[in-house]
Amino acid sequence: MTVRRLALIGLFIIAAAAVTGKYAEYFLQPAQAGWFGGSSKSLMVFAGTASQPALDEAAAAYKKKTGIKIDISYAGSGTLLTQITQEHVGDLYIPGSDDYATKAIKKGAIDPPSVRALAYLIPAILVAKNNPKGVTGLNSLAQAGLRVVIAKAGAACLGDVAEDILAKAGLTAKVHKNVVSYATTCEETLNDLLMGEADAIIGWDVYARQHPKQVKLIPIDKKLARPRYIPAAVITWSKNKTAAAAFLAYLTGPSGRYCFKTNGYTLTAK
Image 1 (cartoon, rainbow, N blue to C red):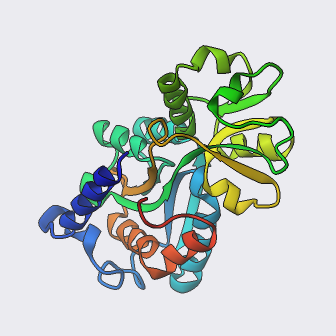
Image 2: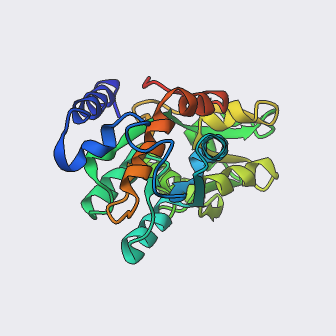
């Protein structure tokens, strides 16, 4: 996604804040939305693992501040979207990439005016810190003997991202020959690298900042790997929309942004 397009999305989100009537609750200040006295004592959040470090911290801080417990179910963004649409459950959906917010809107699973960007991610090649296999870029992922792990498309957002990058580079078949595992979540993809089960993965740039002593980042051409953002939105079937909107406001406010920043996430579009 180009910076211009990201900027337009940001403008859309800001403009949406002026909406009144049916969707006005999504843009209330936390206190107005029942931040300190909502009727719901707990909220159910379905989130991709790409945001787990920051969300866990934010959820704990929010409970301490408000008494409202945030139950978070982590899994691949695609897997969660299937569960949400089939079972009509949950209060907030926080996939790992904006393309799954688009899919959720098309399925009627989230309320479009509630969508907010929490942080920005850039796809990258990640290897062990000392880069023992000498990986230099996407073409290296096709070299003989290299163990590659990518996420599973359709299950995890990172899988869709990886497949898109490989297709654009014309390397799908060559790299697939080296894939030793298709992870079902972003976290699993990273863990395969950290545990030495992979020589290289296609992951998020934030992982290198979260594990500076273990992970080395190798950039991918921006023409192939557009920046993505972590969206958050109120689930259409939520029975606690006011309370959900309040927690969403918290995530996009100073305290929530602090949790993302201190966990290595980028808060502005590049």
